[in-house]
Length: 212
Image (cartoon, rainbow, N blue to C red; front, side):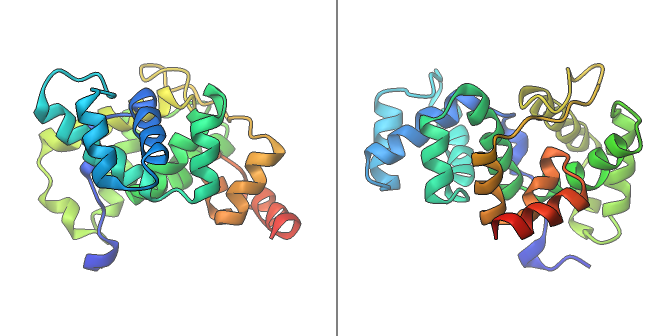
């Protein structure tokens, strides 16, 4: 059974990958010397996330803060200063570190589909995963069908926007390319995170031996 400390955090339904918004807030965070109060003031005053409503700014800023806080200094620096392709990969890392439901879905279900040569994932894959996890995460039993649908929709959008799938409709899988620098960075954080990029267990073990 899930304990309070490892219960799934479902706040990811507030937004999908939000690459531009996260980059704007992360850049402001570094400019503000890692001070979240100053970062929030700057983000709202300059409308860095380009949202019209204060409620939207509040909701999205909270989500960006969750993601940025789980990145280490090197990851954050690479995210702010890297190419769009690198930012996309690190956004996926941040999302998975902040939301274990998504990392579990990718590393267990999506990766299984990829290595069993199913070529794509479908809503049925998500539903199967969700129903299995309810046995060990009772908090999922309390989620309404409407929210489950929203979770599925947002996760498929995240997979599309981070290019793990071709698009949300087809679900066709793609394994992303990680440079040696980014591979090393991920492994030195925790080799398990390579699973979200569809690395096999053998590859993860080999890179752990190489970089750790």
